[in-house]
Structure formats: C-alpha cells, structure tokens
Image (cartoon, rainbow, N blue to C red):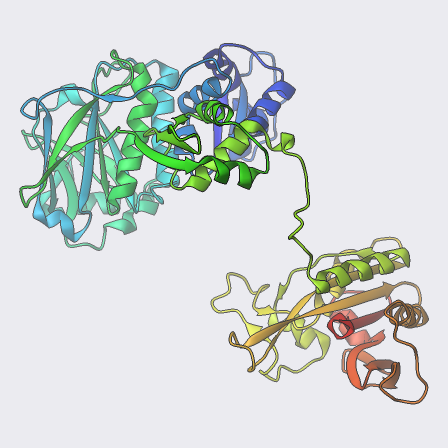
Length: 590
C-alpha cells in the first residue's frame, strides 16, 4: 500500500493538537490507516545514499511514514490526510466543493485535435484561482502529483498531470498530436530549446524521466499542448515546458490531465483540485474549463457533483453483525466524509458521495466505512451457526495437535518450488505426468506446484542446520498433482509430513510417529495384509536409503512412505546430519 511521508509537527498543527506516538497510532488504527515508521529527513537521505545513519538531534524534523489504502487517493498528501482525520475526530464538517459559476464564454477552453486519438485521446482541465503557496504546501502539491503518477496513473501510462502558471499563458489552449520533428520548446529545468525527438535521446540518461519514454517514443506522433501563442505547456507524459513552470509566487494554477482512460483522468483531476482548493482565495471553489472535441462536442471539467446511493440499513447491520439505528449509522458515515440521512422509510439510508471519495462504488464500500467508524475492535466476535469447517480441515487440525504433543514443531513452506528441488534434488525423474508447471514464472524458485512436502521440509532444515539438534518438524499442507479426471486438469491432496534430524537418523522415532498417528485414527496394525487396518512393506523410492524405507498400506491402498533420507539428497540440500522423513496422505482417513 502507498506510504505518505509527512512532517510530524506540521501534521499536528493541521490537526489542531499534539499527540503522543501511542495516541497517534491509535487514531490511525481507528481510521483504518497505519503509522508505518517514525524517522527523520537526515535518516531518509542517509538510507537513500547508503550512508551510515547519524543519531537524530533535537533540531531534526520528525517524519511520520503513514500507510494508507491504495484506493484512497485523497489521503496521499498531508492536506487530504489532515482533513480526513479532522472530520473523523469531529473537529470539522464535511466540506462542500463547488465549481465557479461563470458563463461558457468566460471559461478557458481546451480544443482537442483529431490526431490525439492515435496516441492519448483524452484531456481534462481545471483552474485553481487565487491560490497561495508556502514552501511546505508547494512541495506537497508536487509530491501529490508524483504519488498519483505512481498509483492510479500507473506510472503515467494511464494519466499524466501537468500544472502551469496560468498568468504566463494565454488561452484558448489546443491539445494536438504532431510528428516529433515539428515540436520545439524549452523543457522544465532546462535553458536550451529542444526538438521532441532530440528530447527523447536527452532524457535517456535521466534517472527519473527515462522510465516514461517508452510510453510515446515509438509513436509517429507525440501529444503536445499549446496556448494561443503556440507556447508549449507540456509534452505529456514526459515533461512540462519551462515557460509556464509554477513557483511559490504563482497565484493561478492551470491543471491539465491527458489520459488513455477518461474515468481515471477525472478522478486524478478531482483529487488535485479538491485537495488544494483549501489554499484558494475562495475556499473549496474551482474554476471550470471547457474541453471541446474535434467532432464539436464539449464537456466542462471538473465534475465536482456528489452522487447519491441508497443503502438498506439491514444490509449494513447484517454484514457488520451489530444492531445499529439509522441515526447512529448516519453519524458514523459523516465521520468518514460521507453525508448521509434517513431516506424517509427508515429502512434505507441515502448516502451522498463527495468527489474526494472515488473509492465508494457499491453498498459494500459504505458498509465498510460504517464498520471502520464504529471500530472493528468494538464488533463482538461470534461464530456463525451456518459456518461449519470442512471435515478435511477439522481432521488436519486434530492431526496437528497430536503431532505437536509428540514434540514436533510446525512449519509452513511455499507451495511453489523449482523443478530442480521437486525432482533432481530428490533423485527423482520428471515423468511429465505429475507436476503442474507454472507459465512464465517470475523466478526460478517458483517453477512448479509441489508434488511432495519433502523439498520444503529439507530446505527448511538446510537453512537452519546450525539450530540445536535434534530438529523435529512437521507440516500439514496441500500438494497438487495432474489429474485428467478434473475439469481444471489437476487436484489437491492434503498430506502430512514429519522430519527428524539429529546425530543419528531417528528412524525408530519416525516409525513410532507412524504408529501413533494410525492409532489415533483408529487404524490397527495388522500382520497379515487385509482391509481392516494398516501394514508396512519395503519400498524402493530414490529419495530414501534402500533397505531403510517402507510404504504404508491402509485398507489395500498405499497412503504414505517413511524412511531414512538418502545421503545424496541431504547433500543436495546442504544438510550435514542424517534425517528420517515421513509423508502421509490424510485424505484416506475421511
């Protein structure tokens, strides 16, 4: 999830009071976010440069790193975070965002050319009029753009944000797509004039911008935004022009978002303007811009209207499991920035979703906010009468308890492993008929779905060979085998595995564990093979020593194997001590 770094003192000033670290952690937990780390600016810089961290001094600014939900774009900067916490704490009412009432003739206009449909077809715009920046709010304004670019904008592939000093420009504006040889301008933080194709080469050595070049560099046309005087505002999604760069003295900000996804562009624009409209001369008011398409149609942005949603009270209370009255639910929702009221019938709640809460899409989102505001810790724990565990899981838990009482420690290993670990390192041959192969694995460590619990257990011992001996571990988990009878072509099997590693092999202890498991499962040992109990027979599996291994036969079917692990296998997993291993399919006991 995204992490937002904010200065502690500035955050507390915005919240109107100071908190101890414990108090602030409790506030974050109650609101559904988390204080991830407490550090300083010096420590962050030292970590980035791989320098030895200096001890913090009293003068160092304390930085809070706060983890927020990935779909809460309104919390990605201090302004949005502080406002949300103030409303949650009851210090502030939900703000009402408005679009300035000006005629279409007076609006700035953005004309979209047809060629933009070849590369980046959408653009939305707005103006923050009479804004006042200080250094902290200016940095926050820039940082929010970076956070949005990394998050909802998907590294600028879906949306790219451009912000400009409106007083340096003259409308109307045009959004065009031209061959790169025809685009010339001075980019941000440069003094030299570049042609767009030259700029692509120039930024290939730029650590920050080179990762965005692939979005447009192979296109025959590049998107570009001009003002009336053919001054370049930006070459999205790469860089803005130096001419319209915003500064601390900027009073009127023109915001444009070009995109391949119009819905996300609207969300990004709304997030930018609602978050920083608090610094405008007319608080929470945004000036609209008319976007005129090449086909003559036009739209006015931003759209800051609230949309209403009817949510049944019974759905909210039933899902949370707490009986709540309508007034209680509406008050809880108001703490989460959702204006709500009784719809009149007493059975439904009418919820007004503001432009800041783009994450509210369905009634379940409203229900979740009620649960957060009520407090998850305040919801009584109860077991649903209709909820019954699967017999296989019940059996697994009983077996876990029994083996733990025999002095074994449970481990959990990856269900994915490498082909080498699953076959070659166990002296097994891949017959191509047992293992499920992972398509396009991200790592050679996760190439197949395990067909045995043995690789993970041996790997665990190999990584803990310095642990005091003996090592006694077990695992109850699933393996997957190819199965033509299943519609998905494979089936799960629940296995039990146990391993002993010490100065000697411990074969007799593993044998005793087999007898104990079969005893508690009500399977008696029979000396003469029949279907009333279990017996063991010699086996010849390559992962075990010949003559020191046996297969377990229960009611005429082989259900498992145990024995002393072959020295070659131990060497493959870098295990210096002898081991004995048991593997048993517990599904046969159901």
